[in-house]
Image 1 (spheres, one colour):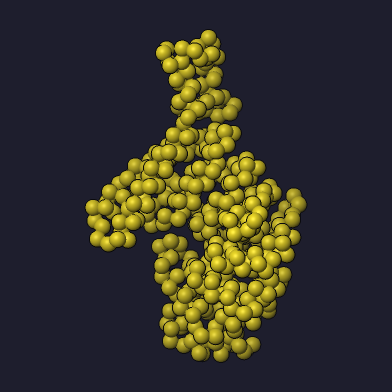
Image 2 (cartoon, rainbow, N blue to C red; image 1 turned 120 degrees about the horizontal axis):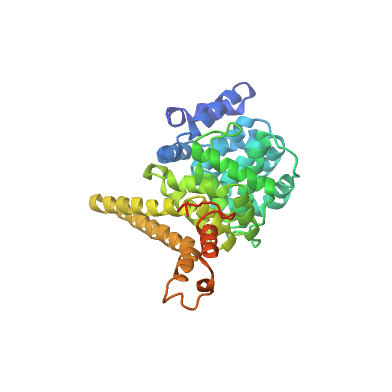
Length: 374
């Protein structure tokens, strides 16, 4: 913050000259980075906005996008941590053309910029208007089944998330398209790294940045099935199970919306059940109840009250998801009730067959022992 606030003119001059531009860009990009997650989000947002508002800084950086990867890294960090910075970037003359050009030479980092910009409503409109979907993302994501390097995986992940954001949020007339299996496998891998706090391709992946695009992907039936086949259910379960207030509400909201979208397909419910998500949601609802009660008891501001209200809504949503995921199991149990299940065909089956049906319902799809050890 000292560098940004006390020496803006010096920074701009340093960026403009070849001899000093690399060091200056690298220093500012580092200042704009947030590797501490949600706990540092507000501080990082203030720092990034202060950087983006330095007079003449963004035009100087844009001139370097095609030739200097540190310029691309700087814009990536600004867009990742501050929505207002993203808006300032796309409204700076020449930014879109420079970003397109940099996506050829510095694809990994340029796709990071595109992904972060795509989560900002105003920036996403600019990306769509300048043809980034057709000219940049679609061609780059047309990959086969050949093995990918870690850097290629990260590039595919960023591009796929950006495409889901740009085509699945109402800013485009197209609907979010189905992604290929390679891309979806990579998204699950990236989310797993984000949850565990591990880097992939030198990138610190924050859960909300991944979940934003994933939420849009789970509107597509084909994507849902493939994502679960690629192991999404246990990763989402881990996100919800490890959630604490310091993680932030966006992670929780996006995760639960993804689960809601997945649970609309009957073939997805069993996979979610087997990942243990029902018991996690039940514990989460109790945790959120305690948090909202604590917030209400100690709230002194309107912001605290709004936060508590949001937490209460999420607790109710967790319980609704539990009900949805248990509908089939409740129906099966009701079929064995003497009065409620009097007309149920299950009553004419012998005990051995009913026992096997229960194993399929409460265990795995192979009928092995499930969470109730039937």
